[in-house]
Length: 501
Image (cartoon, rainbow, N blue to C red; front, top):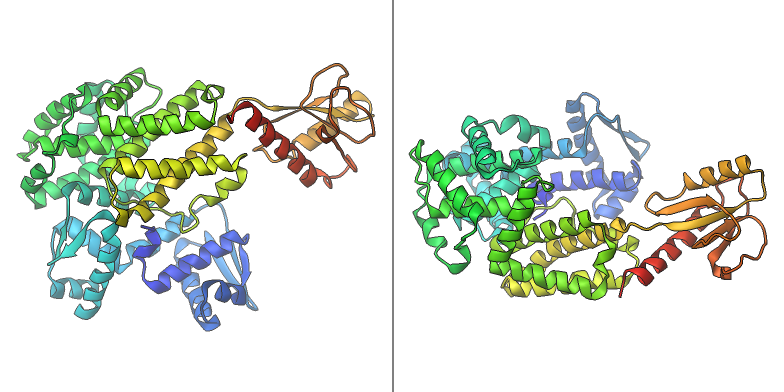
């Protein structure tokens, strides 16, 4: 689910206008916006006026101007688009319905329609539209109650609050003394600390859990977790079960095995632990080995990656990051349904352009197909599940590519005095795309280089003609785009030679 789908259609369009302006460096004409969004110009003009009114509530931290049909967006480094986006989300009917159900558990059409100041017919239409979105999470609103797996309900609300609200809102609003106490007890009992983000995530999950325990019995939830895949035997689960049972008994909550499972799966799928802690390493090793469905997915994915790449070329830190990332992805895909995104229909497609070999994109698609099979995802759910998964694996492959520890060694041969040549080398190096890992060095005869950059015609022993780039001029930035293309192509080629099998 895209977060923007929670907004009414006109608000979705206004958010699209903001993102279109961001894509076009803050400026576009009304005509261009209307054509891009397939809307009437008058509609766009009305949207611009609405946006100007919205931005006026943010103390001039962001401004939108209409100068003879040219719309310009200007920000001043004091606000993010997420703050603006949250303004739309929290005022949307969908969001208010969902939050009402979180706080009160149920509603009747007449009372809620009066609360939202809309007609009962409009509310019914909104519920129908909301159910279409909730289907991705295998949830629905029926007779004024959110119906579905208790695990899915809590997972959905965690995602809604984590992704649907700015960081500082969650930081400031999720204040519950019992949750704070429990996190401290868990850190002391388990022996490893949670990250700062992890603590906020935990607080959100615990607040949602507390609301659900107050509102509903967990008898049905108990029945959910009788299947084999919910039987855990690792030491972390056993310790969690013990600590959580003791803690919640003081509040007279019915904290049973199913509650321990839900907390445990949240903890693993969102990975809230400090990764460089030795106990975290030990815990991941144990859990991955004992949870067979996830262990099988991890093994399959790592096998596919090793078939196309020499993983020994990556740093040890990144290899561990890969394991923990796959671990988290696979727990989430196996035990939960649905996801939230800000990325829109294009996802992370732009990363493809920076990958050195199309096979790296292909392997992402192969991994997705295999994981969907291992997780027994129904055919009806595979389209949107696969979309999110492919982005996960593509991002991991991209990070792997960026992690490679070697650099292009480039000899720069300029016929100037050494100090002057050093100035030009530094000038060029600081104008290159920082994503290129390049050492620009003064050329010395007899040294070995991957490439040569020069502004003179000269033979370089051991270098092929296509390994030498002759600058038209070193005094200006004219050659920088062409030089970047030259370096980038050779960088990709060398990675293929050294890493891709």
